[in-house]
Length: 455
Ligand code: ARG
Image (tube, rainbow, N blue to C red; front, side, top):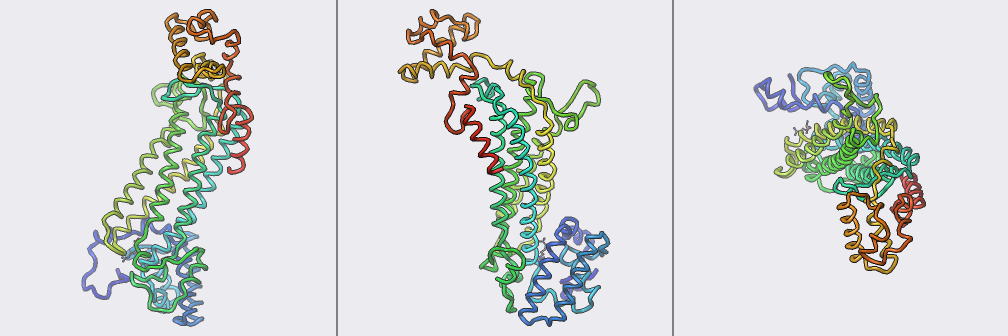
């Protein structure tokens, strides 16, 4: 097994050490970025007159051939390949001869891998944005259909005030907008060029790093070579964005699992998005949602794992940094599954407005009753107490709040007038909340329009 760094060694690497050291099993998915980076580097060396145009052309043609081999699945891996960088260079040299050995002039795998990884994250962000936007779209579509379908709203998972199904759906849309922004920012943070930083101290060749950045789609050049080879903040940013996104998906899942239970019965999952039980024939389980909820734990772990790896590192490149890629790849792969599955769940969900309506009980209007008194000039604190007494009175008589007679209400305060009964209407209650973000029809329409504008 010949190594890129074999010159000063007189013994072959122990087989188990080779396996321990190797990153090829997971970093081969960087092949495209690695080749793109190498082509830019070859051209950079040419522009700096380190390579002749013919040498650079030979390297570029060879690298394109290697890329094709990867794309066609014919790339011949060799047992000695340590990582994607050594595999590509080895193969390149097989294809173009000794000139292949000139590609790595002035470059190190340290600036190379950081470049590849950043390019990969930049692409991954774009791909995730597409999935995310589709899920946002699914939520908007379903919210539009049921924008004014009333349902009980909850705090502490207890009946609180009436809301609508569309309002609830959109409450899960807005966090995803913030996730999109966080992902976008992770992509922006990745777009700073390490290439040309060498192993740690910079490159001894007059390569124009600004031109390199431009050729590779980076917005800036990292100004310090020591920082450039060891900065993995962009990976942590990506994992934070991914973890928080997965936590939002988990919360949405949790609530849909509850709402699809027999006790709620607000929604029903489509057969295509649920699974059965091997023992109980009647079961239809929300496994897709449970897995989404479960995977959020792992995504959080990926973030904490990387941060922990970074925490104790001395300056510049340390091999610990090889541990940076698997969590990022795994987070990406997980979201590439969970986002489209969640979009499918939302699009195919059966909604049962009648089950929601059946849960609309008068106590949900207690706040409206207090607001009624407030409109008559009663200070809110006082109104709150009087309505609390009314709730207690109804509870003790074992009747709904709406069944209290005017005479009974007036034993609490004469401020309750004959028009009080008009309060006990769910549509009226929804319509009361007209300020931005509220449940009134116009406010919901405005919210939907805003969601469509960003979604
Ligand atoms: N496979 C390594 C990684 O992923 C590439 C960089 C190796 N650098 C080194 N000095 N051994 O981090």
